[in-house]
Image 1 (cartoon, helix red, strand yellow):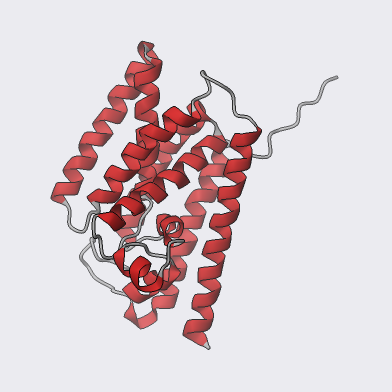
Image 2 (tube, one colour):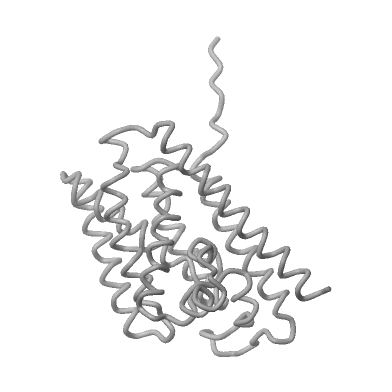
Length: 242
């Protein structure tokens, strides 16, 4: 009788890990903010962490990069959020787009695309003179860009369906960028363009299966992301409570 081992990593586990990390970082930012946290009935500002706290936890933009040379914030900013509505919207979007990208690109390439496009979005924000910026939407736009590339490149009924769906998301992003306050359109544009690019560079499953390079790249990004987030949390703890 043949026994098949269940894979240690599944799309559900990877998705939960990303969401839980975002939620944990949001809770930590609120705890560190203390009385400086904004408690507002306005949903756009409800449970808003202190800007100073977000800054030392890893927010990106002109301020942290020029004043503190915090280039590492290009990675950490993708895991921070500026309010309850902000994180809820981004995590709901992640639950929609990430499974599709994991299905077509694989778990490891999905995480690499998420990280690389987050970096690209915040780097473009820096050149666009954005003062301070955070949020998973940069990496989310990267995943949308990768799915957009997949749909257009693959073609056929499934490819056309994916392309049509992701094109609709792009239109929604543009509308949100113009209609809602405090939206960083630079990070959205940078993430989206980078997603198309890295979707093409890394390829999807029907072009080639994931290999040792894909796994190693993703493990590297997981390691450096965890180290940078943990470092900022620990340093913040001693800064506030010492």
